[in-house]
Amino acid sequence: MPEAAASVVSPARRVAFRVLLLVERGGYAVDLLASRTAALEARDAALAEELVLGCLRWQAQLDWLIRQISGRDPARLDPEVRVAIRLGIYQLRFLDRIPPHAAVHESVELVKRAGHRFAAGFVNAVLRRVGRDPVVFPDLATELSHPPWLLERWERFYGRETALAIARANLRRPETYVRVPPGAVLPEGVVLERTDVPGCYRLVEGRAAGLRIQDIGSQAVVGLLELEPGMTMLDVCAAPGNKTAQALESGCRVVACDLHLSRLRRMKDLGCPLVVADAARALPFRTRFERILLDVPCSGTGTLARNPEIKWRLTPEKLAELHALQVSLLRNALELLAPGGLLLYVTCSLEPEENDEVLREVLGFVPERIVRRLPGRDPGDGFFAAVIRSS
Image (tube, rainbow, N blue to C red):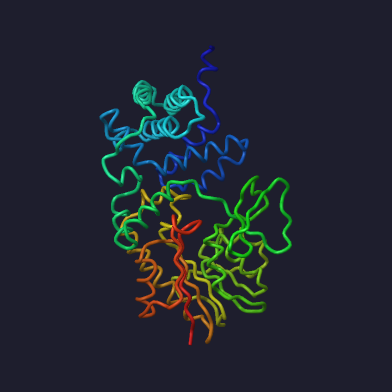
């Protein structure tokens, strides 16, 4: 075989390799995949997504295997070498349809193309020792590929059985849910399954092109606002706008604000007023609203199945920072709630610091109406929602 032909790397692996390197530098996988797979054929885009999210979900297992096989600490390897080996091991152990020779050869080639030819032999040697036999991992954190501190706190807050169910759910590819407003026309070839959340459907077959992808947990909490036609509503941290669009279906009058103008610009098609505002400070409104949606920035630990890099970045210290921000946001939003109005405080976090403890600090109590959605117990992402009614 000519050397040029032998050194080909598939588009999917090239993109996956680059995205994983950017994630190591602080990028977010879903956003990077969306931009970098747009020009790929559907099959290549799907493989790139599988490789990236699979490597991130199972990272603890992959790194343990690197250490066992090579005797070297993965953290001390060059990022390009570490990422290439993770890609290779993931394909060899998790993807039955990938020929082993392709997984090994293209991982080696990726390292060469990244300017690390000196490491090609090392990568080749490690991957050729990877098998598919069951492995006994040293602890539960490695087996479930989660940071030990995160598993320990979930067990403390939710009990062992629920904590393990959450962790296992985070390792599975999440289902895709779409929002179908009344009167919407479905694309050809799309098969949907109705859920118990009105307007929410699970994608069974086909591509969701032209439909608004929105997790079932996200769709479920909006209903707690009890919206009616003509009501005034403020969406405080509105971008990217999925909940805003869902609220508008009710016929209420929505004002959407967000800190970032660039994110608000993507919501222009919704046709509601858009306001740039820092909700951590007093909000620039003279009127009060009958309904307020406060979906605060949070750790996102309820979304680890689709955003697995979060679990490797999050620290207890970060939770304390988020708590302080969330307290400010809730206090400022409550100032704009009309008498007899309703505010919905929402996170996609499983952590008490961002949920019950925020409410206790601001209100002095936890409201009676609380909805908790947990991965592994409920379909979709994990969510926390609290209904706060003004007197």
